[in-house]
Amino acid sequence: MPTLTLKLKTKSLGEYPLQKGISLTIGRRQTNHIVIDDPAVSGHHAKIDCLGERFVLIDLQSKNGSFVNEQLINSHWLKHGDVISLGGHSLVFKYQKNEQAGDKESDEFDETLAMNTTAHRRMMIRSNPTKSINVVRFWDKSQNRGMVRDIVPDVPEPSAESKKGKPTGTLIYLAGGTGQFKLTREITTIGKHPTSDIVVKGLLMDPTAVTICKRPDGFYLDYIGGLPKPKVNDKTVKKSTILNDLDIIEIGSARLQFSIESSPNKS
Image (tube, rainbow, N blue to C red; front, side, top):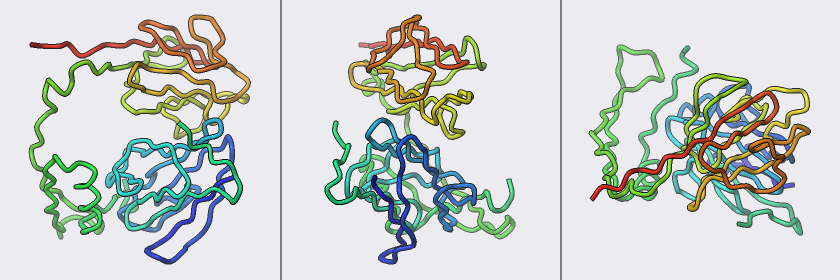
């Protein structure tokens, strides 16, 4: 199985093996599997899920972002040699020799220090060179240690042209929960692990039981593992299945309706 090597600059701080079927969380809090003592790292910063034979890094809406090979990501399928940057630390993802890499297609402690370093600004600019980034930050002595205030520039909304033709997916609870969940990530996870996007409890439920992947031609549901197999419109799903508007998804105690809406094209 692959490993993650935690580094601070060139110094190795530890090695962590990844396991199939187990989600690994990364952050500043002691409850994480990988604890990074860095004020620029959020309490729960990111996680790595094993989906079949592959591993995916998912940012948990951290303050300073997660980077892979200096590119800002929301989610990213990990490949041998990828370098994950969180705050001032890095994690190197590597498979063992001769291993087949599955890379085919409140309190003071909770306050995260906003980064103001050359390396962080450089990665942000490389990730989005067309966006103007105002990096002016200053310490407010009237606040507690570790807190900052940002001077945030007004960022224009994406143009109507850039939004054209991009579908928006939503899951609406019919049973097992309330409300709705927007499918904004490339990969949405469903399972019993508390860091899953949609948590479904159950003794026989896998940490990640189902994923919904956003692809250019639509949203695909994939069964990952666990005894309760997902159903779409009362039919058991065993392979990657494209979702259609108003499809009913069942997994464990959860019953969800999928809806899709395309952005209107305006001339």
